[in-house]
Length: 455
Image (tube, rainbow, N blue to C red; front, side, top):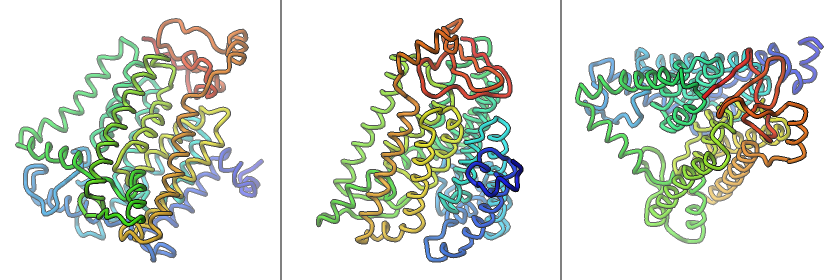
């Protein structure tokens, strides 16, 4: 079946043909750029490029001698220092900076698609193509698109045994969004002992290169201020935990919304929910520890760890911005080709989550912001879809082992005892079940070459 005939069968063509994927990519990105500039129906919604104007303000200050985290900004930088390289774009004007930022985001977007194709993740590449139109133009107007690119780069480098390069990318991602730091720790067990020193050194060098000059310039207080500001945030109006607050207001209670780092609830009930989310986040961390202690560290592939951590973050975090779904989509794209039986469920759950998030922002954002009667159903729908996605993600990451299938696989030599604890092998020529994924329903992803991770 040629590329033209595959266009008649768009679903199969999108998965099987890289040419069809690029055709869809060009079409969706062209409309996405137009949507970012207010084409219908986005001319009737909340603008998606407002944060880029804030980035321009920070970039303008940096280009005119302001020392980040030291000199006072009219609006202080509230991101970790990993965003500074992206603020180095020439801030000639807000409009020019928007074009520069958008071109860089599209470049990363295209690179991610190419990287997924080259790593033989056909389902992941197809899902990445449709993820952007499902989420909306915010896909290219936040720093999170770069985090997604770094996650993809880090995992592919890890699969190619370039552990130091992988540590570089994942640590860089952690300097923008803190949660990838968990991956640096979790992937350490997969690194062969003879290569762990390079992995640690690469991580340390990235941290030193970023924090060393800033601390030398006296930015310690400013960096701690970012930590305190992020830690003191309330329940964001788009998060899962905004639902009880909207319900409380619908029942006659008072749950005021204030503009802090984002639009957040405040008041006594909000404070209680903040404590509850902190407890849930601690329980999620404890679950990861228990998971490791019970089943072993390497029973999950590195891609599965990305999806697991991303799902737990959006499930427990009281601050849930729409752009977080960019790296959630990247996590699914990296993992989806490993799934054998529940792939369709994961695709549907991911697509539904992205679409429900776009319903919140930009289409329903004004309703949420002003707490109109439509805010409660919008929040309830998004919460239900988010819970469904997390349930599916945790299910595919932790499938129940079928003893008959495991026994049959072992008798056929598909699943074998690893030569040493923590070994992971991926055969060339097709998907096979990893030695460290005993009894899973998601076989390890086939790569361009044989990968063998010794302890």
